[in-house]
Length: 129
Image 1 (cartoon, helix red, strand yellow):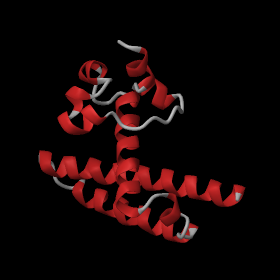
Image 2 (cartoon, rainbow, N blue to C red):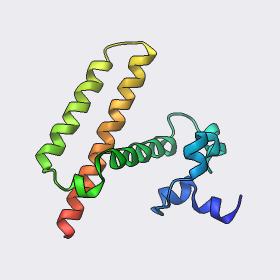
Image 3 (tube, rainbow, N blue to C red):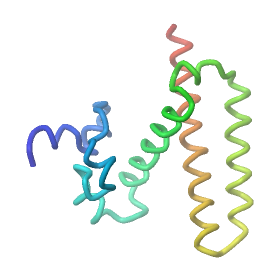
Image 4 (cartoon, rainbow, N blue to C red):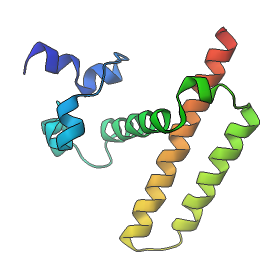
């Protein structure tokens, strides 16, 4: 593994090193990701795998909604309301045992977690402004 690949790995991301996403990964899926080998052997319930997916969800939210500039327009109450909406969707999906509902349940929980992270980031930016 090259030094550049090592620095763009999950380990660096978890250590707080923020690097741009690997272009090959964006084009080819997880097989092109520097951590593809790691991802394939890590259990689906591993904290590393879950945190990686949470970071992906946060990045997706920033891309869709405009990032910090947009996030910082929300009040704490609005953040809680958004989180409640997705938690309610997760609660609804949890009633059904099929795989599609289970996937939607987890997707909504990732939205809840990513929204909570966004709210904390916004709160800290506002506090330090």
